[in-house]
Image (cartoon, rainbow, N blue to C red):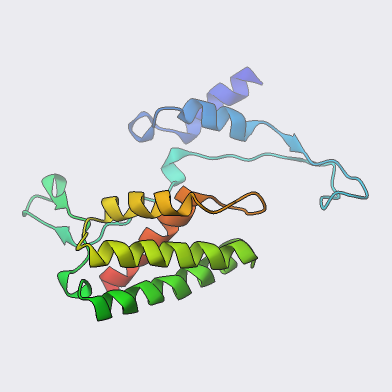
Length: 179
């Protein structure tokens, strides 16, 4: 098994794409997992499932409002909300858009659940507050949103505060790119 894991690590993760902890990720992901079959289980197969993950297959972070200095390698990526979204009426419109879009995304990505309604409301409220405070840096908005989302119980949910905040920021980036 150790040689298989070593081979998988070398084969799936070229050195230039490696991140700290990737060896552990591949070791865990390469281990066979057998789902027990029982009358109370949703899984009915005893066949092992091999999960293979690699850093090379992870999607690259989405970039909003790229500023290019002519040199693609040295270009600075600026993640900011457009200034025309900051006045209260537009901020309200954008936060309502986020509430609806995030709720739909959570329902589609995971499964419809009551927590999704609460997550989308809290995320939209945090976003609205950030816009009213003239906060345009998406990193700061992300952290503020994640702090607010930590007030929700995720006990019966498929996600958490940071995954929800990341999804919201990704949706906002897509909206910025479309405008």
